[in-house]
Image (cartoon, rainbow, N blue to C red; front, side, top):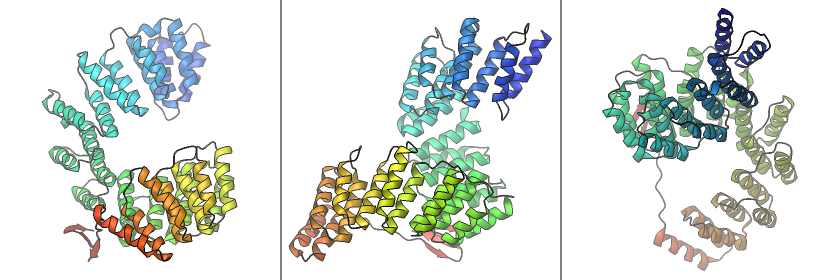
Amino acid sequence: MHVAIRWNTLIRKLSLSPTPTHALHLFVQMLRSPPSRPDTFTYASALKACGRARAHFSARTIHALTVKTNTLSNAFVANTTLHTYASCGDIDSARKLFSLFFSPDVIAWNAMLSGYVQNDLLDDALKLFDRMWSAGVAPTAVTVISVLSACGGAKDFSLGRQVHGFVKKSVMQFERELFVGTCLIDMYAKCGCLEFSLKVFDEMRIKDVGVWNALIGGHVHNGCYYDVLRIFKDLEMSGLIPDELTIVCVVSACANLGELEIGKKIHLYIKERFRDVNVKIGTALIDMYSKCGCIAKSKEVFDLMHEKDATAWTSMIGGLAIHGQTEDALQLFSLMQRYGVRPDGVTFVGVLCACSHAGLVEQGLQYFYSMIKEYSIVPRIEHYGCMIDLFGRAGRLKESLEFIYSMDVRANAVVWRALLSACRLNLDVKLAEVAVRNLLELGTHHCGDYVLLANIYASKGMWNDARRIREMMEGWIQKKPGFSLIELHNQMEDEGNLVVL
């Protein structure tokens, strides 16, 4: 008995450690060391280790053992098995197991609900919650968090409001809990309702940095970047210490505002508060300096990073490509491959963009097909758009059109606009008309498309056609006014709103 307890204690401890696979190795040793036999706690801990390690094959093996030993009849083991399958991405096995439960308890419902959310099956999650509610199972805080995550992802504001109403009426007073309050802020922000996020935030009596991050991240998500900087200032004044996520959001706001000087101040703040620039913060800084037109600072940050993941390499390659430094971008991509860092689809967008800027058609084609054959990456619209732009800049418009017709997916507005822009460079009236006709068929009415077509007509001396397009635009297309951000004495003003830094 005491021996079994020691085994269980060690396996459970390792299952919760940063190396959960060690728990599985110990579990195998236990199986090979009679007379010790696994009990319900042993199986549950081993399954938990499988879930944390994403060890799907081991999970199926242990599941089979629980069936053989009749341990699966224990609710604790069954619920853990369900959660493990969901964590491993095997939602079909999780769903099948859940269907075998005669009367699932709230933990089983929560495990299945969480599994759907983790695997981005948001509609299934919301349908399951409806079933749970109809079955009379009282939701817990875990339920509410999963449902709010699903509502935010699906942008289901109506159901999110209903869940919030339940929270307010609940005896458990969920809104006082940090996790639920944070999820409410995040849900409303993802639904585009920042005023509700702010209301929840203001009503919360206890706020940790995670709550502030949800509010800041919500404003980033909705493009309210100057508000991000203001909220960051309020966070500092609250006495709480910003964490990595806070800094990444603030740097992202600076990047999207193109505020180099403010970005530099944030970078200085990072140097003062953080011992090392980690991967996420470093990548955000690379992106910020690149978008602010200071690619030299991006290189400096990249070179000083002790650790670089695929995202950091991709951000640097993309920055170099956008700034027209094709040779440096392609050399860095080769170096990335030599270091054994696997590129993803976004990396190839940067590589193809670099080829496009330099008119390297053949090299671009090699990279495009290498992406498919060597890395098994399915081309997305962004890749096709880069290729159309590449052909267009090289004056090979006929090949652009042939490439569009050979695509595995239907060309969307991004692709046809890339062709239209290429027609503007090459003053090709016929293909420009083809592009605009396809944009019309897609139901898009963007004033820029017609401005480009009118300019092509004008450049070719086709004044009547240019006038016809202009008159048509005046009838049913309005150009949206822009806005400016003005920095005065370390204050940034946008339509009367001030951000003090």
